[in-house]
Image 1: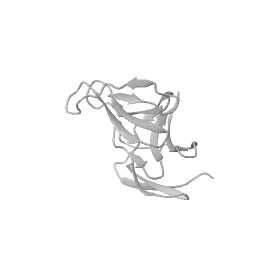
Image 2: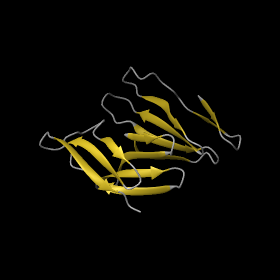
Image 3: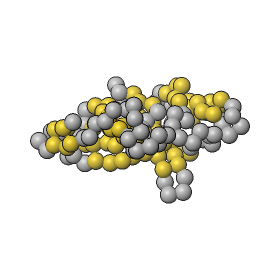
Image 4: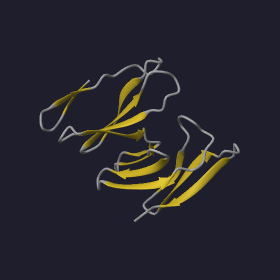
Length: 145
């Protein structure tokens, strides 16, 4: 797939079928100024990574795991990202360029589909996951202003 930016530059994306173990790349979301790309590397069980391409400049970043919550209308995503020693839950608003980070809850899950947003608004969000004792757990987080 050829992505043509607003400045005329072109970026080539190698799209692959999802039903094999060679990995794949697919278009995730098309926002006003950004394109979100979902990528999974070779091998089964690898997490889907989030690649973000700025439509104006062509600037390209790998942010973390592909969002487990995606609000296309308000251009807000929630995903898991990694630091050198831990991980965090990230809420990123692409319209305002505002990023919030929260501690990652303890979970038994090791790869993919570990978290689910069951409520999200401007004041708080509630995340659902399986805790280390194998219990379905919900955790409400007050959003940072």
